[in-house]
Structures are given as structure tokens and as C-alpha cells.
Image (cartoon, rainbow, N blue to C red):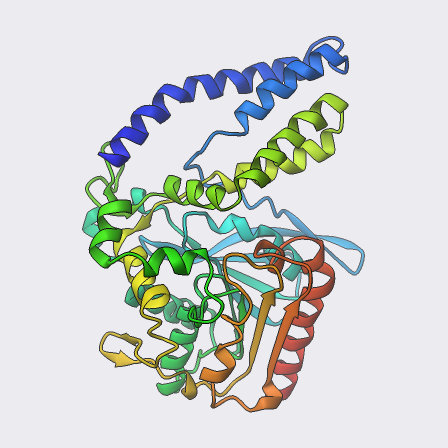
Amino acid sequence: MLYKTYEVRRRVAAPVFRLAGIQSRMLRSAPWSNSLPIRSARAVTETFAALEVTHRHPAFKIESVSIDGNEVPVHEEVIAATPFGTLLRFAKAGDFDQPRILVVAALAGHFATLIRGTIRTLLPDHDVFVVDWHNARDVPAAAGNFGLDEYIEHLTDFLNEIGPGAHLMAVCQPCPLAVAAASLMAEDEHPAQPASLILMAGPIDTRINPGPVNRFATKRSFTALERSVITRVPRPYEGAGRKVYPGFLQAIGFISLAPGRHVRAFGGLAKDIVRGSDSAAARTKEFYEEYLAVLDVTAEFYLDTAIAIFKNHDLARGQMSSRGRRIDPAAIATALLTIEGEKDELCPPGQTRAAHDLCTGIPSDRKRHLLQAGVGHYGVFSGTRFEHEIYPVIREFVAATDSAIA
């Protein structure tokens, strides 16, 4: 009944949110729109409208990129697609011979657009591909299951589509699965095995410096997790009957980690609108439009991840397998870059760096670790610190790896 109850409440509230949006637009275009009374009324309607949780896939909004002072058009190109995910290329107009990077976003209740800042920053110097995971509620039950094995196979298949020499960048949750895919491809001497692994704030070994996600998983059995957070997609959605971990629970969970921060953010949004600081208000609204756009995750992927990665630590203990094959990170012999945030509350420092101890087949001169001072989880892959301090390390690492291969 969990999803059905949510749907009833969402449908009741939807007209109210729409009305608030309409009122906001009317107030923006009204006479004396910059007067204090009008701005105060806008603060109420726009702040309320920004609270809406949606299942709409936001646009990436990357239409051009600046290269050597010139604006180069960018368009999204579908390279491959399955019921569960699409391999997108952000293709630039013109002839650019640049390193190829496959960026894998977390499948944890948000769309891949959450890392649009990462993509935009990478684009001037790289040929960027992204795994855009689909909302499980829109995937018919007849499409079958999607767990850790299917995820690993998607990474392998998508790397194969891109071809030899691509770099694999995993952001947050998919880091262990990127290691798994690279391990199997290395063992198979697959021609499209990644030229390097770039692991950003991911749970490689969650026994180290456990965070709130670890504590949540370790306190609950498989059965308890399934009973508490798994539900079935209701009609009329295409995935009706499919068991999922609903995205609205993920949004609630993230907000509950730091409720005071979000209360202050929405209070700041209202104050910015009253003061006429529209640019600051727009940044806050854009963030929450993305943050509250959620997708459902298949039950098997959520439960597999919670048990294998956060509860049993299978990869770190050498016990992880896929389709009956043991995952051996020591098979990887290319290059490794790990990046962590000093203040990361979701994936605390040490958990990602643990990949260095597992990937014993990579020479030390091809390994690099960055602990970025002053940033939390999202600061590892977005924002000013990422653009000016973290990204140059990534760019240099990719270029050096390609030079060594050549």
C-alpha cells in the first residue's frame, strides 16, 4: 500500500503545486513586479512550488561548450539502449580527437542529470559518454530483473559499444560495480576493458569509517529491508507490478540526513526572492528541481547493493561474484585514480581509497589518490572546488594514462 498511498497524496497535491507555479508566473509579469509586496507574494508561491517531488526526467541542458574561447554546439546522441538504461554521448560539432570517458552515475533514486555539472566540466577536454539509467516504474515487468549482475553486464556492453581505450569514471554508488566490470574484462582480455578507473566517493570498503548508509544497512536483515522499503509499482504505470525501492523514499532519506540544512536553504530561497536576488534564488530552485526529481530502483538492485556492498562487504572481502564468477580486482593492470571528500557524510574518507589495496595488479606509479579538503559528498563531483581543484587532477591523470599507453 505504500506506493498507492503516496500516489493518492501526490495526485491530491499536484493541482496545488500547479496553482502555485501559475501564480508565480503571473506575479513575475504583473505590474510593479519588483515592489516589495509582489516579491513577498512570489516568495511564498515559488518556495512552495519548489517543494514538489516529481518523477520527471530533467533535461541535461548542455547545448554548447566553450573550447579555446569558441562556443561549440553539443547534442545528445543515443549510442545504445536497453529497457533499463541508455548510453548517451554528448557529441560536439566539429572534429575533436579527445580521450573518451564513460561516466556512470549512481542508480540511487536520482536521474543521471544530477551529475550534469560533472559532464559539463569534462566536455571541453574529453569525448563524454554517460549511462542514463531509466525509472524502474516505467520498465515493464516483462523486461525481467535488474540486479548487480545485470548492472555489471550493462557497463561491459556499453564499454564495448564505445570501443577500446575509453576511461571509466564511476560517481558514488557504482564504484564497486565499475571495479567488478573492469576485473572481469581484464580477466577476459576484453579489447574494450577501460584504460583507467576513476572512482569518485564510492563505497569500495564500507567497513572503513562507516557512515549513515552503512549503519542503516547493517542493522537490518534482508527480510526487514524488503518489508520496510520495497513496494510494487501501481497502475497505470508501465512497470505496474514490478517491485521497486521508490525514489520518493530516497528523497526523504537524503533530506532526513540534514534537515536543518534544507530548512535553511528554503528559508534562504524565500529571502532571496524578497530581496530581489533572482540569480541566487534561481540556483537554489535549480538544485531542488534536480534533487526532488526522483526515479524508482528495481527491488533486486537495491537489496543486492544493500546486502553485498554495505552489509556483507563482498568486494572488500574477496567474496563478490557475478554469474558464478569471482570478482578479482587484482586482475586489473591499467591505471587507478580515487577521489574522496574530506567532509563526505555519505561515503566517508577511506572507503574509496580502499580500491588501491584491492587492485594489486596496478603498478604504484599508475595509482593516484586525492583527498579533497573542505568538500562533502556532492562537492567531490560538482561545484567550484570540483571545477578548479579536482577536475585538473582528473584531466592530468587521463592525459598521462593515454600517453603511457601510446
